[in-house]
Length: 374
Ligand SMILES: [Zn+2]
Ligand SMILES: [Zn+2]
Image 1: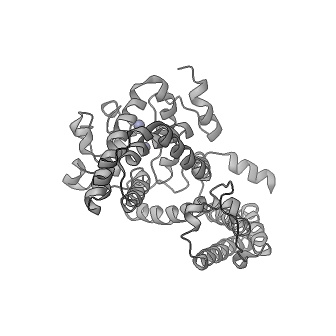
Image 2: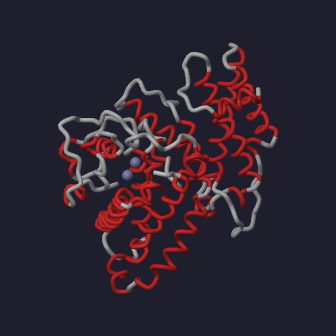
Image 3: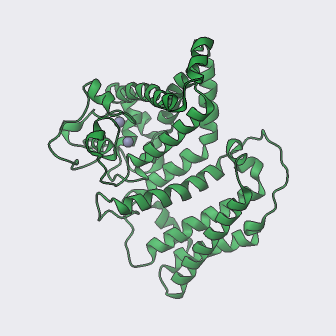
């Protein structure tokens, strides 16, 4: 079983249907999440994110855990009974059994100290469950490439990026917060902060997105036009299939640099907490949605708002689209700065880096910017 599991997690191909591999993978992923979830219940001080756990309803979390255990265990059992990919489903079943033995959804949570170092296991679990449910549903409803499966080629690499980027979210938040305060603290002006902080909600939200996207646009353009920076950003562009998982493929240094630069003006200008929270929801949704395998173009609105169609073109290998469409929220910025893709075709042909020189696999991509001789 272990040999087969090792081979399986090390591979990068598309999952074949009809042999219990897809249901087995879902059962195993859920089984792992259940096991990690029970650990988070046992050691909340080290494994959950302080900002998140303050707003949890623990009973809802327990119910989600129980539901995941039932679904994972059920899928695994059915596969074992019908002799479909038994090795995969047995591993899933063992994990669910271990989660149940460790207390399952009934682990009591006592008072614990705050301020301990932590990894954001809870954020990873909840975001994976939430995003996969919401975005796979949207992709099935509005599929662009209907024959592209959820577990397409190279999904393992993107999943690996997803896991790592989420686990270190606490560290990234802390690091960017420190850097923003250290490097940009001098720029804060009480008069401006007061004015911005008192803007009506919708005005504040439209303004915060504009400020963030202006910074994002020029940072993103620099990633494309400055060769040293392109080394980092090429990793993001190496995805060959667009879907909800594709956007996770991003070098950790790029993540840190971009977040710091985008958060700096937001901090300096002093937006209200409601506006910042709403902006985080918008960013979180658009960052995933723009990569989704959906045929969304939005008619004339596409000249104003960034759609999946707009960002798909950014990932295209077609020469007419190279180094274009940089915006993340407001498409009009690219029309304003003269970098919008103008094509007579509706959708691009092929995604990825022209010349295909970025290796596949998480660790190879982590090293890539430092070892590439291009
Ligand atoms: Zn780019
Ligand atoms: Zn992208």
